[in-house]
Image 1 (tube, helix red, strand yellow):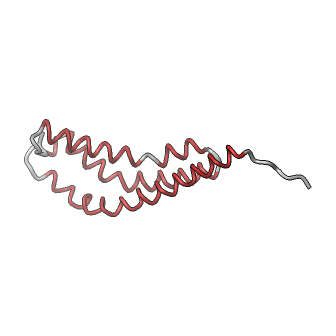
Image 2 (image 1 turned 90 degrees about the vertical axis):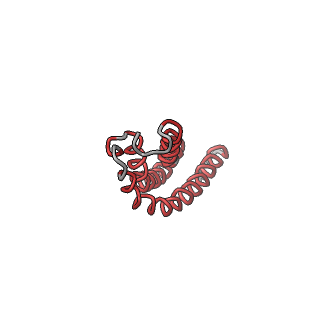
Image 3 (image 1 turned 135 degrees about the horizontal axis):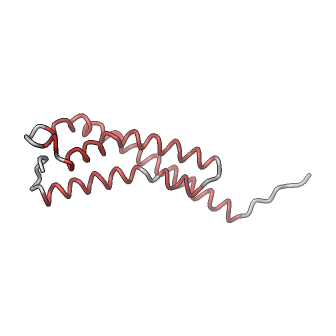
Length: 121
């Protein structure tokens, strides 16, 4: 019987990707729970007059609402790609929820600086 030898570099890459996917899945999965109350209260952002036409406010609400869906799709897709041995793509997909977080923080900073903290900008 012959044995198939897998290079140690490939094994190390697979193990590093697996560790990253486990950590990312846990962290982003846990962050879904604090986002749920924020999603429930996001309708209150449109209470001030003129905020329903404010692009930063709409962007923030869309970012909040999309976070759980993006997280679920990203985690599932990343693990599927990992099983198919597409390690770089699996890391990229596992990191997609970071975009929602960055967009949300950037919009909050934008509204604090340019809109004086108001949702109607």
